Length: 438
Image (tube, rainbow, N blue to C red):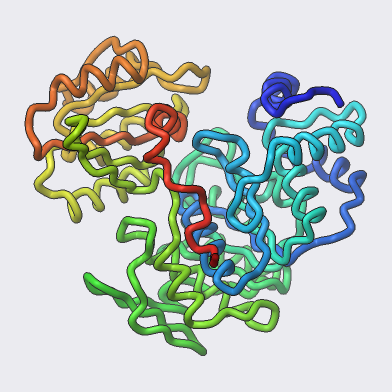
């Protein structure tokens, strides 16, 4: 074996490929074919700008209520790499992942694979070896050229379409939507959860004979403060519980999942009870997650969200105004340099009293100086400067809070949220299997 530990494998993978992000199916197709994975579970593939992780979490939670054996592949992880590859809600062991990496390494020959490609192939191999009933595959970036698209899906879901990753996916929603649509296959059902999908995407699907269901055309929702109802062409589900994942926008993600599962009723048997309990019990760390204040340690309430692009920042601002209109927010914020930082700040600046730009130790991350410059350009001047790391930002911020009505907001990059959970692991939600039946 090339390496004895998972950490060694991961360090090598990060440095062995020439590009961190390398969108192409050419290399991964060759290696995947060489692996000769003979078993293919029923596959559900999820793409989208935002909401992919929540959509997968709802699927995992609902399907587990019916005792299906589920393999789930998501990215990025928050604390441990193993979070990316789960079976029946539980992260797989280091040894299992290392064994899959060794197999891939032996087969690839002189073909170079990216960090994400190694992980995707490992997940597919592990799910086949474990003979899962269903595999849930979350697209890492785009869809058309993403490594998970090496598999022909049995059901496709596009959660949302926004402007993000423009260097790789295009400058407009129209261009980006075609990349997201790339996971669709002729004759295979697909659901678009976006409330305003570009017409070019619908035309693309129609030209390829993809049977597409669209939000507010093929299914509808009605909501109130305590419950909501879903209405499709064949089924109706009145009186559904509010989703276990917080945020008003999660109803749209859950609704797309219900529609998707209704389209494959001949393959998967899903009861009303499974839908109800799965939606109620679904969980996902770092999605509008509230950590209550602690009177013993005198720490304030903390709100955590991985809103790292303009669309998700807009949703975060809406949810804050709806759920915490009277709270004073102090925000620890960091994001990758290739994001539209100005638009993120534009959506959030009226929600935040003071900002604390947190530097992340990675090349792609925006520096504190870059974030400060954007904040100043947006007319935000209550901002801490020259913070060296998360711990200093956290300490300075706590010194500034003197009122019980104040709340800490940690938002932006997954890597920033990871910094918080590494220091306060008890606040990381217990796994990703809240919907799994005992």
